[in-house]
Length: 497
Picture (cartoon, rainbow, N blue to C red):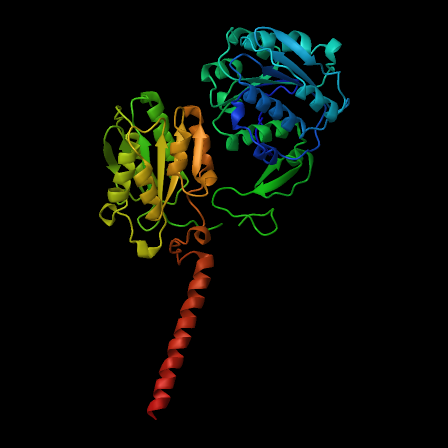
């Protein structure tokens, strides 16, 4: 259930039944969420059941936010007896149906019923609720329609008090695709126990309300008609569907033309890039190897040379170590070979110390950074899996004040507030997070470090004058300069007469 569908669709997904398990902290919801959710779009018929956790740990104001969360989702859907049907089931130590799929046929009556729900305020029997969904809520007696996709959204505030792994496995065996979305107090073990594979596609961990809209976008996008597949989109490279619409994208190294469909060979800008990678003991050896592959994937997207892009690598834990400076290697192959030889440090997580080292050493001219006057962008990328053991505020701020564009990439237990403090503005373009090391390759694909020169104002690498199309430009420029010089000489001769 991706936020946007590409023309190249995933194989192996079962369109019959979907279960979305959503763990969220309701206090993160706000009126802004309504703006973040997409507008209504055309969708096929769906049978949707919400399972809402009303255990005693859910505070009254949190339950109100869960209530609003459901209503905001419903506001994006096409509700009707022949379109989307909705039921709501409340659970704690017991399970109680508030209304079934056949009870309401309009949005207004559904919203009224949701606003009248009284919490049970007992335990958290999530496994029992999932079983009820399979056996009762999606039965013909409750309004379930044959050959119509079944979607269940489980909303809970924490760890289940019963076993969910077995019942979730049973659900998956019946063709149910399970998505698990966690916010704040989410228990990752339970999310993984409920979710389908691969986890990077089915487990979502959201820590604040300004990220929760991602689930809303992805949820509706799954229900919407994929216009990239269903229409003649005309995109030259990539078509990406969004709810009720689509837009064209270009492959790395290309920019979208004014027609919004075709792409042009932007020439990449040169950059000085320093990567700071977390080598603390929490990363673990097997994951550190994935981090090194992540670094090499980033390098593959760059135009590395002595006069082009330069790359330096710093590893940090309780101390900081320069693995190689910006001026050591002049080809992607050399850099990638050096990266794979980097030894894992282990120990602590001194991110602040690493930022200080980057600012004072890595971007010095002595280590290969080119003078500021040449307007070559300086980019720092911090990769971490946990909370820093020292203060990052001073040197995160000083790095950005020094003109370094900062990217922050977090995985696992990385702290969102720290990542956002490190990242340059706009944060949404410089901050990346994933729950699992196995998904960091996706982040590498999405990083836009090798920007076009009009965006970076960096130098453009000198063209090969022997290339056919460039030879013409070279000849024209040379003839123009010669003509100007001849005119100048003629004027000098005439002035002497």
